[in-house]
Amino acid sequence: MTPNLVNVSGLVFDLFGAGLIVMALAFAKAKIVKAQSLTVMDANPVTHLAMLRQRQDALFGLLFLAIGFALQIVAALGLFWRMAYWYVPSSALLLGLLAYGVMRWRLNHSTVAERAARMLQLNAAHLGAE
Image (tube, rainbow, N blue to C red; front, side):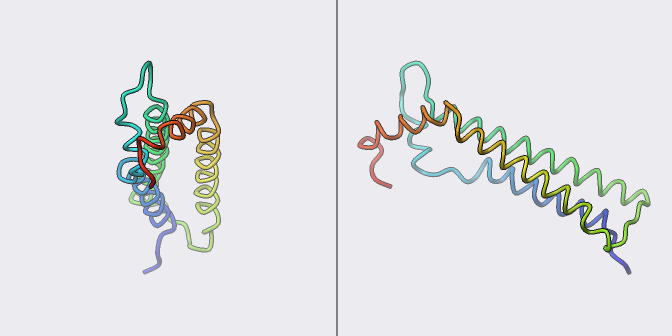
C-alpha cells in the first residue's frame, strides 16, 4: 500500500496545530503566572501580553488543524499524491510556521511586551528569583 501524501500532510498539519494549542494552554512559566496574579492599577501588562500570546497560539493552532482536517477529507474523497511531491506540503507548512514566527516576533517586540518587561523588573523583589 502506497502512502497518500495528502493524508499524511493532513496528519502532520493536525499535529502542529494541536501542538500550538497545547503550547497556548499548558506551558506558562511560573514567573509569568505569578505576575499575572498581581493586583495592578489600571491594567496588568503581563496578563495582557500573556493573553495576546495565548490567542495567537490558539489561532495559528486552529488554522493548522483546519488545514489538516481539510486535507484528510480531500484525501478520503479520493485525491492521491505520490510521496515524490513531498516538497509541496512541506513548503506550505514551513511558510505557515514562518508566518507564526514573524507574528510572535512582532508581538514580543511590541509596546505591550516592553510594558510587561518593565513591570516584571519593577516587581522582581515581589516575585522572587526564579
